[in-house]
Length: 326
Image (cartoon, rainbow, N blue to C red; front, side):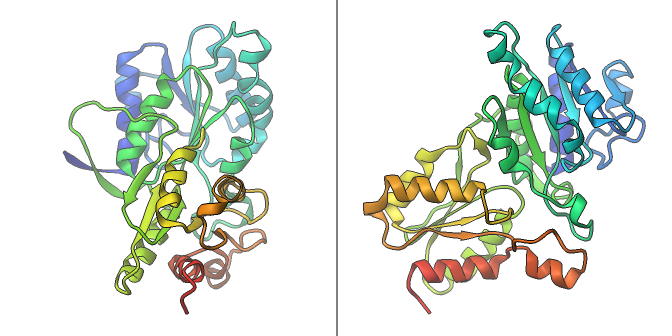
C-alpha cells in the first residue's frame, strides 16, 4: 500500500486508463498547461501530449458537446468541469444528449463518457459556486452518479467509470483534493453501485456519501464514548443506489439517520427515507431522520456558513433522537 492525496488518486486513475486505451482523452478548462485547476491532471500533458490532454475555452456547452459527439465515433472522453456549478451551462448536452442517445438510437450508440469535477460547498465561494448537484443528475435515467469520499474509493471507482459504456457523473470536492489515504500499489477497480460499510455497529445506521461523511465519523466517535454503536454506510454511488446494503443494516439496527450535503427538499435522503419506511416499516423503532443543509442559498459569511452546513453535532442530535435519548 502507498499513501496518496485524493487528487493524486484521480490522476493515477486517468493516467493508467489512458495508457491502457488509446481512445481515452481528457478535456476541460486548464487541464493541460496548468495541470488542472486543482492539480488533478498534473504531468498528464507531458506524458500524453496535447492531442489527448486538451485545454478548452470557457465554454462548457461546447466541450461537453464535443465530448458526447466524439463517443459516437469511438472515443472515450473524460470531461472535467472546474466545478459542477459551471456544468449548468452544458447541462443540455449531459441530460438531453449523453443520457438519452443510447436509448433513442435503439442501442446503436453507447456513450462511454465521464463528466468529473467538484460539487457542493468548498468554503467561502458564494452561492453560485457552492451547490450540490448530485441529486440533479441522479434524477435522470441513463446517467450513473458516483460521489467518492476518499482516495481509495476515488481511484477504483474512476477507473470503473472510464471503462463503463454509459455516461457517468463523477463528483469530487475542492476540500477533499488534499486528503490522504492508502491505495494498493497494484491496479484495482471497484464496482459501481456497491456501497461500503465504513464502520460496523448495532444501534443505529448512518448513511452518507461524499466529503460530508467525515462529520458522521466524528459524531460516531463521540457517541461511542456514550456506549452507542453506529454503523456507517458510505453509498459511494448514488445511481444506481445500493438499497440492499441499507436494508440489511436497518434490519439489524432498526434505526436510520441520513446525512447529505444538500437542501432538504427533493434530495437523495428524501428518496432513501421514503423507500426504507415503505419497505421496512415493521423493522423501524423510530422515524427516519434526515440531516441536510439549511434551505437557503449558500451564505458567504463564515459564521453563517457554519450554521448552514450540517455537522457532527447535527448528526449526534439526530442519532440521540432516533434512540429516544436526551
